[in-house]
Structure formats: C-alpha cells, structure tokens
Image (cartoon, rainbow, N blue to C red; front, side, top):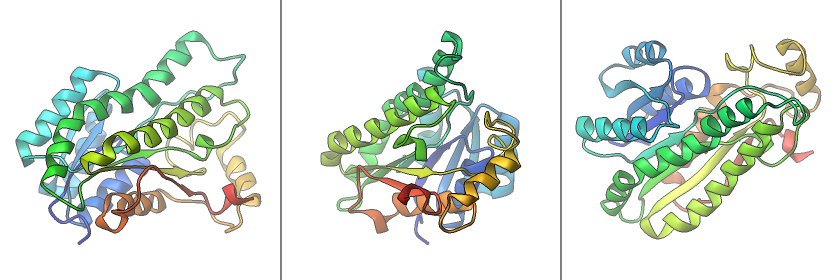
Length: 255
C-alpha cells in the first residue's frame, strides 16, 4: 500500500474531492483526519472509513482551530506526515460586483486558511520528515485551472488560486531543505456538490456540457481523478517532485 503507516490531514474532507481523497488515502494504508466546517458530514465519512479515520470541525482560517486540529492528530496517532489543503471558499462574482465582505470571506477561506493551517502543521511535518530521510513529508494544495488562467465573473477565486500557486512554489523552496515536498493538484471543472449548486455561468449541466466541447479527452474530471493525483503527489513515488502544479482537466489547459 502506497501510504502504509502515514498520517494525514485533509481539509474539506466531508464531500467532493476531499471525501474521495480520504477514501483513497485510507484504502492505501493511511490514517486520516477529516477537517471540515460540517462536522456531521465529516463524522459520517469517518464512520464509513472506520478506525483509521477521525473527524474534527475546523475553520482553517482560525489559527486556534488549526492548532487544535494538529494537536488532536498528533495526540491520537503520534505524528503527521501529510497535509492536504483542499478546502476553499465559494462565492463566484465579478470584480465589479465583488463586495468587500465577499472579498474578505474568500480571502480567509481560500488563501489565509491554507497558509495558517500549514503554519500550524509545520512543526509536526518537520519532525516526521526528520525521521524519514530520503522520503520526508508532503504538503498538497488543491489549486485550480484558474491558478494559471483568468476567468469571467470569478475574480476573487482566480486571484486567490493564483496565490495558492505562489505559496506552493515559495514553500517548496523554503521547506525542501527540511525534507518536505510541496505541490498542487489543479482540477478543471469537477461535478462536486459545490460546483453543481454554485455556478455564475448558467445551469450546472449546461456549464459542464460547454466544458466538454473544450476538453480534448471529452470527459469530465471526477473527484476520484483528483484524489488519485493527490495520492501520487503525497506518496513516495513523487519523492523527487516539488513546487509543481499538476493539471487534471482532461487536457483543457493544453489547448
């Protein structure tokens, strides 16, 4: 198993990409802490996955919540090897229509949150990396196709997902000497519950149909596809990869 004995935190793990990743990580031998604002949904996933999974409510924009999450994981399982910063905010809006309140909310949920949780987790990740010479610890962020491109009517999200890639590259440089790898998986459109209820470009099914016309592989990326890429990036198979964005969008970003 590719993550046998590893200990991981996955944010936004109660649904969509996070839940698919939790299932895949546990299947590959990891012990996984699901962190989510929706504690009831996180607990349901944890019950499904059994003794190798735990759930905690965590607002990753709160440093106190972040520290409590990391402390609980270390207390239960003795360390931390993997941090998957998957959770992000919603609220698609144009630059002109974006209110200060919307901007601040998206800033905290999509950029400040991953920053703070990474800060809180870093001592435990460093301790684990020091015990694993040649392999080390891993941090993965969920970026986006919009980490590299612009988009209509989605300015705050685009700005903050570009910021995620700046964080990935700078952390890869800073943390490499500590034996910690940092990467991002960047989906195109994925039919998660959030996407299927929150799109500014029309009915979700119509948006997906339009994406298909621009996708060389002619199929929509699923949460399990993102989970498989995240698994690779945190596994020993990716031990020489850091500071990279892996686009998982059916080839859309190539054309």
